[in-house]
Image 1 (cartoon, rainbow, N blue to C red):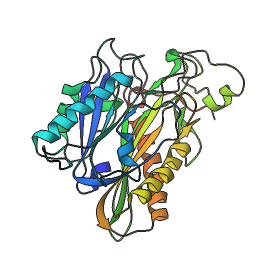
Image 2: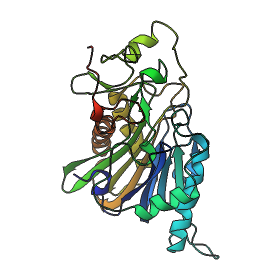
Image 3: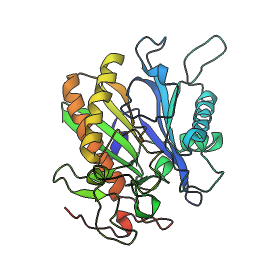
Image 4: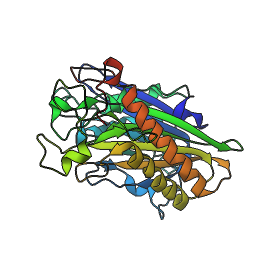
Length: 323
């Protein structure tokens, strides 16, 4: 299973700085894809979001750039534009094509090396690395510095990263998702309701504290601002811009299934949708498949993240669920 690149015409590339613990991820749709967006979070950092809304002069975009670095990371999108412009890809204008690139960032400044953020050069490297092979997952790209379970502060959080998953709904119609999980809350397995990764009961505990329950009984013990789950959903079904927006909205149900709590005042959660095909399928069916793909991608982002820079990850030994 290749993840998001199961959709023909979609390519994914990462630029990863493990030393600085930050990076960026680029989703290319060089032939153009009809976009949509849903923003259930309360602290988003984005660029060119109006391109995704009905009423825009163009019906297609060429790339989505996801980056760490908080607002500084938006600079990476300039590198993606430069890469596409050099290939002659973009919205046609009398002065030449202008690549349409939307972007969103997450806050990894608490773990990343001070002063090093995804920049134009990293964005260009990620775009140049984009391919249609299996999506690289774990602590890579925009997920290099991603963490979860931060209600009690950094000493009790866990490592997360990038995950990707695809679902087929029949007649060759596919829906796939890529998730970069940097959530305030815990990652939950929807199949059994158990916490997979999140805040631990103490810095050395192997049991989870259950963030949602803790929030009801007192104030946090750490810095809770600057959290975001970034999601890109793609399908080979033909959608209008309005329909793509609806699929993005329905896809966020998967975020709610796999993260608890989610969409908080401290989370900048966002979901992009890309229609890159000509197949026909009901929008609601696509939305159901998208929510499933998103939930599985989030689980993979947690399960494939290693212990790194002292932050425990499931690939390097994991706490057990207390539920």
